[in-house]
Length: 178
Image (cartoon, rainbow, N blue to C red; front, top):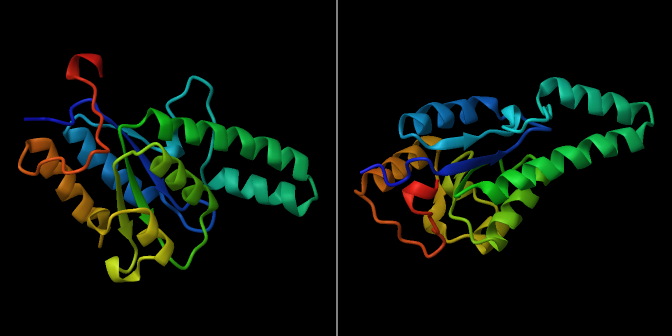
């Protein structure tokens, strides 16, 4: 059925205090098979190249360590702006949360997604029983999963038509407009 063909998904998760590349690469590989466009903050799709990988983290920390807060701030403002723009451009969101590691950007991206009423699939490191209380207050529990693999399987079922889109948050454009 390919219901989600050409839809855009943004991946939300830890980058400053934990590496988020592995699970994002897995999502990208699986979703691209379904022709879902994946917006990965490690490889932003913009004409202007905005780096946000491990090297960027080291550079920002060096700037902060050297008291160059304004330069660090300017770089982060640009990253923040571009990342929030990707939330805006996405049809749905996939997030991976590690409950015991702070992730300020992920928190803002998730709040933005909630306010925009984006369908959001959240994987919790340690399983659903480890979900932060605040996340339970933000999202219906049926959109909280034990693993990235569970999210991939659910998206496959939605894409194939096996599982109905059971949320009023889905606002997909007709395929000819994607």
